[in-house]
Image (tube, rainbow, N blue to C red; front, top):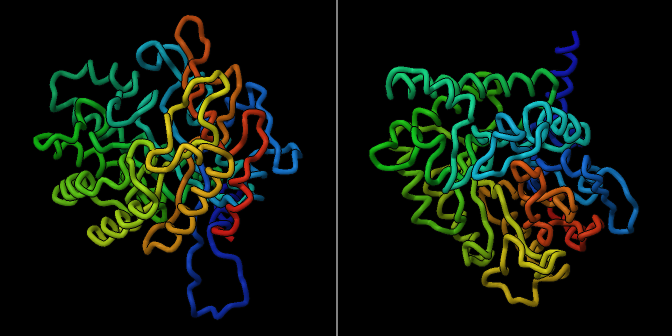
Length: 395
């Protein structure tokens, strides 16, 4: 009875509310605009507090919802804590693991926010440079006799873990609308087995097929996302997705990271790119990450992760400049066919002496918070002007 009640609630939340419109006409889906909240439990445990534009403190998710956010991104790592990271750094224990993902999903769903889940298939950050196999998986694979058996087992592990996660989210009534198989996988995933080299694409394809099938076996309505960096780099996306299509990989949504600093692309150039790739592959596109400085420097006086704002003038590294950039981006993407929406990178990871990009092994002290000057809240946790305009594009 409990499971049926939760499932019914989840399905009801996924359906559009009755508006009195003609039942024979399907309303256009809402433009999705939100951000990554994965570090929220860590932030709150460190004492972070948030307030709206008037200075009234409250639950940051409720503040974002009131400002017009309608979706959150939540990242899952397999195991966090000391000894699970890379190069002497790690994520704090209990942060961004499955119990934390379930808790954040409950909070988001209770506010009516859609959920985008990113499966990193790793214990730590993944991107083009690093795609480490989870430590426990690597230890298990090392006991197998040869490369073929290890690869076969890895495909099984991807499928099994994906099903477990999907079942856990469904059981508590918080099914994700979108599920990313990996994070920024332009160079592949689960290195070395899933590297995206020409000779190795069949193995990467096998891993992606296993993940896609596992998602659909539990949540047929969830839309799988394949996410690359470098939004605006048409040659990169054509090469990668041509390989995926040639090897029989199925997916629902093209995911793209778009940062003016790293890409050097304007909003207009990003929109042209979106039109090109969605037409070529007949798939919708979701901007999985974006970010823009609201001030040039972090509180410690150093540049943040985004050293500048790419083709945009230095004068736009201000609260008003961030607002104006996001207004342009939101309006342009909303007007671009087959673009579902965007997710802002780490909108809530504000300056805090206990939080950084990771924790150091041994001392357990945080490294610098390199996104504290790109958040949607200022250094003290007060909502920035960018949140004044958000609802115009999602209401």
